[in-house]
Every structure is written in structure tokens, then in C-alpha cells.
Amino acid sequence: METKNFKRVMVWELPVRFFHWVNVITIIILAVTGFIIANPPALQSSAEATNLHSFGIVRFIHFGAAYIFFFNMILRIYWSFVGNKYANWRAFWPFSKKMWNNFWHVMKIDVMLLNEDHPDVKNISIGHNSVASLSYLVLFLVALIQVFTGFALYADTSGWWLPKLFNWVSPLLGSDFVTRTIHHISTWIFILFSLVHVYLVFYHDWLEGRGEVSSMFGGYKFVSETRLKKSSKFHDKKIEEK
Amino acid sequence: MSINNEKRNTYYESIIKQGYSRRDFMKFSTYMAAFMGLESTMVGQIAQSLENTPRLPVIWEHYQECTCCSESFIRSNHPIVADIILDRISLDYSLTLMAASGHQAEAAKAETMKKYHGEYILCVEGSIPLGDDGNYCCIAGKSAKETFLEAAEGAKAIIAWGSCASNGCVQAAKPNPTEATPIHKLVKNKPIIRVPGCPPIGEVMAGVIMHVVAFGRLPKLDRLGRPKAFYGKRVHDTCYRRPYYDAGLFAETFDDENSKKGYCLYKLGCKGPMTYNACASMKWNNGVSFPIQSGHGCIGCSEEEFWDKGPFYERTTSVPGFAVESNADTVGKVAAGVLAGGLAVHAVAANISKRTELMDRIKRGKKNEKNIDS
Image 1 (cartoon, chains in turn orange, green):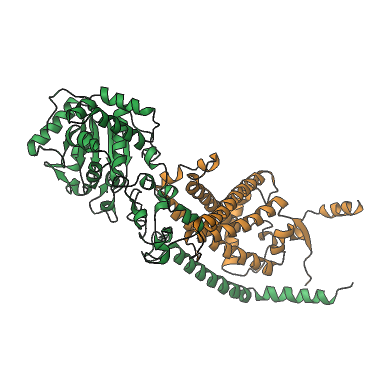
Image 2: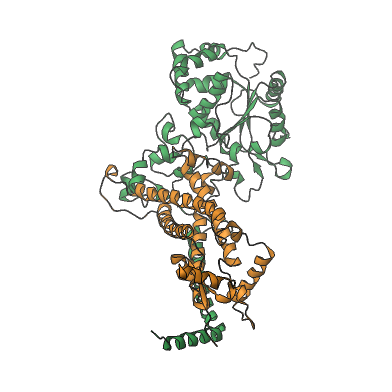
């Protein structure tokens, strides 16, 4: 049996990768500073409050990271309309019949770990598989919850109109008590997601050998040659000749 | 206390009749303007409208409550508040403070409601129980719900005093056996001012009433129907201990050194950062102190469901559906641990289940390794 021939395919364009890594950094910063704000460490200092601003700095970092997280999200939403098909918003709406079939296929093969007698290469998703896109859809909603509750808690101490747009959230939920509880619990959803997400990336890289991990750095994934159009060989030659 | 047949005096006339001087009256107007956060030029307007406006008929109903709102009100800063607005002149009906009782009192109320239909202000202290046909709170043979709806019908506006009338308060705590209900859930077609707090600050109550009296309209309200002048800021944002918070200096226990130094009570469960009220700026008992100044964290008594939202002395986040002792972080840590364990099991299972495919690929990969040409 021969090794498969793979073609290098640009799957994750630069804005997608940029979004991903900014997300990673801001979520880590937000979670860490968030937990510090929720339960600050005991500070043994004899300095006067006038000369200290440590908690204010932690909060400043949290709010700064929150803004970056928010604008990064807007960038990604924009890119979901102009980017390639793996970045398109349709890839995150896995409710077509084809994608639903893929969902059950992934559930069987990758979650329940069953084996197929005749694996079909077309069942392997080039971009996100349907289970993954569904999880990103959920995560997007949780991110929205964080944005809405976070800015709602922040609004009253801000002089800018943007956070003030979220002034209505706390009254709608009843009080800042509820808003804060939701904000805190949602953080854990990010943490649980990250665990599964990182594991599954390694899982796919190990079992499919298509560069799942490195794709988020370079953007390329490796796709079986048989899945490309015949004419692509011709294109390759043309590029080489140039 | 039936004064309905008398000529309706203006507030000024009533105040002078009570033996106060013009000077007292002007002081009172100035106090009020300050409470409402108005600028000094508005003092004249308040004085003028008190001189010219006839007394506003007020019905003050008591339902499921502890009367702490009334107690707070009569202790407000200026004696004229208690004397004129509440005690003698303005109230046509108030269970606690009126002289009349029994049939006389009920008759006085009925008369006010009829004579000043659409003009009187209805003040409500206490929540209204809806459980068991409202039998948990009956006054003069009628259920609270019945009397309230009757009185609300002809009211110009309704003021919900305190957390009971605004949010339900402790009697609405789970499982809320009497189905204690805040009044805005029963009446939708009347302007309602919610003045939450257990009790609200006396000066705030006076300020709200004076605003209605002096300007003939409701004060500016926020989205929850609370007067913006008093509920626009969090206790935390106006707290004198705020610098300690920003510095990261917290009391760890109530008896430690930090607590003695007056550090921030955040870690001892102070709810100031989530509570909208004027405690830190107006303070209590004629500006003497407020809970945080006395070394106790805010319990958030003016916020909805403060009684069911976790312990008063901890900063924990409770998770709905879990035991009381568990908080969001405990649940999160357990979930993360279980998940990590599950993923480890999955990783092992994956290697076992897919071993044929894997071994095959590894073999091919190694073969290719040996055949590297250059």
C-alpha cells in the first residue's frame, strides 16, 4: 500500500489566524484577570492606598483585553462575509443536510471511535467539521454573552458611548447580581471548551496526519490529491513555469 | 384624621400653621433641593411651588412589610418632612400614623379616593401576597390585592416604597410561600416609582415625594423605574473605601489588621459593587454613617433578589441548580477535572480502536523514511 499524495491547501487565511491567536491571548488574559477580580489575592503591603493601584491595574488589563477581544470579534464577523469558504459564516451554520450528515459521521468516527470498513475521504472535512462548527457557534454565543454582560457591568463607570450601549442589560436581567453571575459562569464555558478544543486538534493531527495543528500557524492543511480537480495539475505547472 | 372637608391648604400654609417660621421653611426647601441633586437656583422654584400648590392627597397603604420604610421616613433629616409631609397634613390614610381607626379610617380613605379620583398619590409599603386567594394579608376584611387594585385605580401615580413593594423582599425568598408579589407586576397602566431599599433612605423618600409635589411630575427614572438622582450610582462607586479597592488592599476577616485599618470589605462579601443606592453619598440617620463606614459590607438590600443571591459574607457565585454550598468555581473545577479525565480516556481508546489504521500509517511513514533519496 502506498502513502497518500497530499496537496497543500490554504485553508485558514491570515485574518482567521490573526483572529484565532488574538482570541487565545485575550481569553487567557481575561480569564486570569477575571478570576483575580472575582477573588483577589491577599496583598501584604504597608503602603498607603494613595501609592498603590495594583487592583486598578488588574481591572485595567481586564477592560483593555476586553476591548481587544470585542474588536477582534467584529473583525472576524466582517471576514466571515469576505473570506474564503472555510471562513464564511455559512461554515458555522451546520444545519444543511450535507453538514448534518457530517455531524453524525464525526460523532460516530471521532467521538464514539467506531471504524469504517470503507472510509470515504470525502467524509474528512477540509475546514471545520460540523461538530466543530457547532461548537464554535455555541462559543460565539457565549462570547456575545460575555460582551453584553461585561460591558453592562462596565457601563456605569465608563464615559464612552460604546459601553453605555449595554446599559439595558442589567435591568433586563434584574440586577448586577445576575449579570455578574452569568459573566462568571460563562468564563468556565470558555475554559471547558479550550480543553476539548486543544485535545481534538491534537487528536485529528495524530489520526489524520494532515497538519491540523500547524494549519493555525501557516494556514495550510494537506488534502488528498484525489480530492482536487484534474485541472489543478495543469495549474501547478503554470505556476512553476512562471 | 379626616380632613377632606377642610379647604385644601397649600404646603406653605400648613407649615406656617404648624408653628414653623419662614426661615425654617426656606431651610427646608434648600435641604430638599440638595437631596434631589438640584442646583441652588432651583430652591426658589421649590419654595414657590410649596407656597402655591395645594396639598397633594396621599394614601399610604401597608401590606406585607415591617414598617421600616415609615420608620426611616419619619427619621429623615429635616423635621418638616415628618411633621408636614407625613405626619399631620398629607396623609389621608396610613395605618401606622393616622389617628382614626376602624370604620372611620376606612371611610376617610373611601372619601379621598372618591373626591380626588385621578389626583391622589398612592404610596405602597409592602408586597402583595397572591397565594391562597391573597388571604395571607387582609385589612378591614379585604385582601391586600383587592384593596391595592381599588386604590390604584384612581391614583395619579404610585410610589413603591422599599424592597417589598419594589422587588418582593425577604418574604418573596424561595420558595415564596405566600407568593409575595411586587406591585409593578399587578398594575401596568399607572406610572410607578420604585424606591427600593430595606428600608430606603429617609431623605431619598422625602426627595421623591417633594419632587412630585414641587414639580408636579415624576422624577427622572432609570430603566427599573428608580429615581435616577438616587439610584444612578453604585454604592461602590461613591464609597469612601474605594481607594483601598483600587489599591488591592482588602480586609480578609472582620477582626484582622486590615479591617482595623479600614480597608475595602470586597472580600468579605460587600455587595456595594452591584448595588445601586445613595448610601455612600447621603448616608443614614442624618448623615451619621452607613453600613460600610460602620465596618460591615453592603448586603445589597436595594437590589432585586438580594436575599436569594448567595451569602452576605462571601464573594461566591452560586450556580442555579446546584447545592447551596457549591459555587461556580467549585463546579467549574470539578467539571474541568472530569472533562480532562474523559479526554485522557478518549485518547487511549482512540489509539486502541484505530490501531490498525495507525500502525499502517506509521509503517508506511517509516518505509518512506528509509527511502529518502537526497
